[in-house]
Image (cartoon, rainbow, N blue to C red; front, top):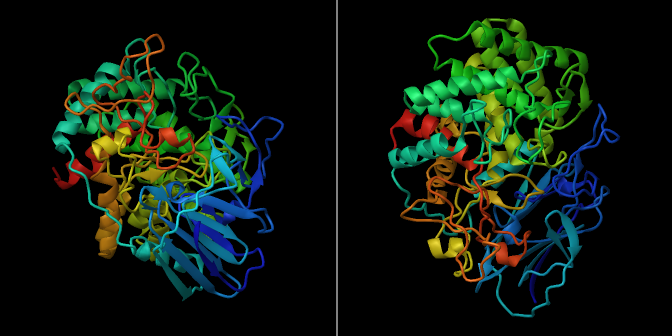
Length: 575
């Protein structure tokens, strides 16, 4: 095995260790080993909840232990270390592969190791660390790498240096050819109206099985907003019906709940006891965005959304945090901690604009500052998705970026612009910076899929995905316009201009790894026209045979694409 070993001073276990989309502060957090989907139990619930992760690659809390992953686990082939006490930092970049085999990335105290071919004593397998049973290979090779050491005063400076250097190895980052955006919109709109509309209950589902989520993974209100903005009379009528369904499933306390008569994405009906703060914040924000498209807003909608805005003010004043889960009837925090409420400040800014209540803006400022200082400025945000406990994730990071942009728009205070820039740098660590070389026999290898701009969701679910869950990315365009920094524009383009290649169409179908159970010789299931699957599997977390493959399923990425088409493309004339 070929190795590059890079040694460093100052290591006492307190150093911040980083691998993009894989390791934040060495993942030195509390751990609960749970089957998928992992949720906190009532016995584990605490108002003051430490960051708690699942059984992912990690260092021990004191900084001991060893991390071994491959470049397929990272958004950028890189290992970084920040020594806050000494005000020093380093970033080590390499390439993805040599002759079809990935590079290994490893860290243990005082030492970064690049190895070829990648080998791990323990490999991460959906969602546990297991002893690696793959054979060790000894193949000599020269491993390209670039080592950058620099004086570093803060986490902001660390991530700024990562942001400006994330493409320093010159890896292929060409954008794919995609079908015209106007055609994408036709395909997606037709698919949503035919396969996502639930006629009996009257709502846009997040997938073809009728799944309903109030927010998070493309909750119907997000799709409804985008379809109202880009569609015609039919889409506007159905978007209104979807909003009616949302408010019908709001508790008296103002919490948007799962519906008794509709399954969530895990097939569970009526999970109404706890409200997920991320989802409620999404609903607050996107309700106001849809209000901006409406000529006549029903009084009931106005009174109910005001109840939700007041709910967050009350929670903030009582707890000085928003928590991760709240009791849907009492509005008490049952699970605290995390950055789950990262979009709430943006929603409260929108509420301030609508109701002219200074309390909404003040709460937005105070809570945004708190989440920046407790979480983001320590190099991570957590708990955006509902099924990762409170692992570090990209979703809460992009949501917090959105909130910083809304606060800057409203106040013109450059503090919020500075925070927004830092959040963009942190978010960039979750975005794939180059085009991964898939096995030629894989579905993505055959279709020449470009991974540039795809986004890892979190450190637990080790795949990248088409788009941000669940935003358009328009905040990055705003940052470019406010600052003139072309790197924000490039990051925006990477994410928004490449998602269309993942749409399965009649002319260019994408096939899943799922096979008919009753036939040996039939081809695998083909994704119907308009389906976008969430899997961009660069990692072998679902075993090697799933790299470059997708399951048979309609996913939230379709709503992300609708949001891009509604907010980025239609607004700015790209086709």
